[in-house]
Length: 506
Image (tube, rainbow, N blue to C red; front, side, top):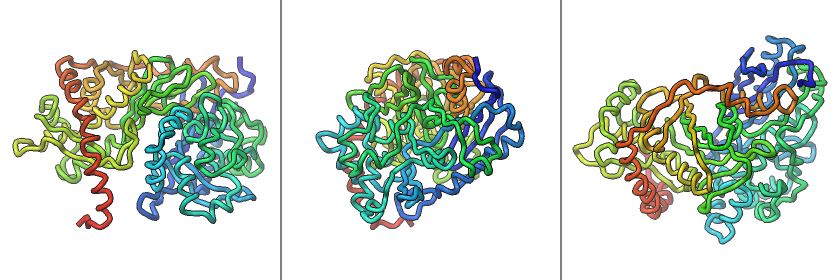
């Protein structure tokens, strides 16, 4: 059914710390890959920025290396994935006025708090699908309005990093519905820019890229892109989507009822649905994948990074992580009445708060190192269980959970997640991720596959971790207490946040 001469699509996954470029065939075989990193700059507390030229260079270098390895005759096209929630200003000549402000940037915390506390904050979340949070381009635009009026005055356009890379590669200023649905600026029910959000941001619709479906094909490269990559000028480029929705596609969790759970440094739980929705309390996001497929769920800031901190600062970095986890596995579920709130990097879903702080609650002299380690693992799993509860509150039925991520190699993480979620968890044989998802989306757009639904068959589950009834009951009892502790400590954490700049760390 292909309308293209080649049978290979190159997925370009523009991540937070690196861009990975991988070539795939329609049966899921990987032919070539390349990865190039770049720094995340933190020039001021709360700022997290990147050089757009460094990211463009990584895209060009990766494409050039993959193209050189497989040759151009087999290439049907290139398709993109990108980290979500980025923002940068362009001048009238379409040149960057600012660095890329990334999802990890929290400078807009006060703007987010102000909107969340307003009467229309939850309604805005329900219309746009994006939680009101400092990660959101909406709140970042409010920060520029309040703090950088000269940049705001000089900015002709506001774009995300993938929008700018596509502009340089194809000469078109467009944003896909997936990344737009993560901006806080697009009405996900009408697929158009939201008038109230634009008013809050202080910008006009014509200062944003043209909204297009994720399967939109741009049919020609610029001379610059062709020269930099070795691709022919007539190479098809599929606009692609955000890395969150594409991660679901990349692990085969694309059909309704199949959730993808990933725990690496951070974590996420997402499920694909056929229409947009948000839970009544606004605990989850809703982002587009295709015109008839949406991804609902929540990301958490604190995954494996929590255990890294415990190992470094409590156990001692000389102790291997597997040894710590083996010791903790001998402790019964519930860690002897010890709970850890794992909010070392504040938190996103389902509270979406920049105020949240970590804490051990219930600590006694009887608790040992293994209890503290197990409580850290349980805290991450319980946070994901709150996300699952919010997803079900949005009316979603979750029939299957597929898990991936670096920390999930250890049995304690696997079993604790299954028990805390109260559901069997399928472990995947391979973990292809967002780059494979981008390639599959590109294959559908270019007519190489019938539907992205083939992903479920291309990524099989290797084995299933069944939840243990007794331990699942312990976590079901602890979950409401764990949830209530966020509110119970909110006032104290707010006061501590204000005091923190005046308190020395050492």
